[in-house]
Length: 76
Image (tube, rainbow, N blue to C red; front, side):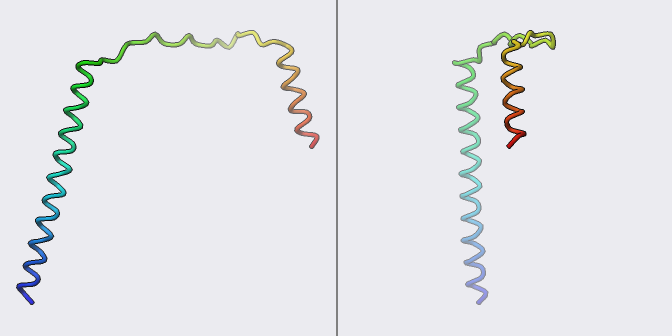
C-alpha cells in the first residue's frame, strides 16, 4: 500500500511539474512575442477626438420627432 501511495505522489508531482513548466514557457513566449511586435510595429499616436460642448445646437425637427416618439410610447 505504501509503494502505491509513493508511486501516486511521484506521478502527481511529475504531472504538476510538467504543467507548471509548460505554463511558464508559455508566459515567456507570449511576453517575447509582445515585445517583438511592439518593437517592429509601435502604436501610432492619434489625436484625441474633439469634445462635445453643452452648447451644441440640436435641430428643432429632431427634438419634435423624439418628443412625438416618447408621447406615442407612453400612450401604449
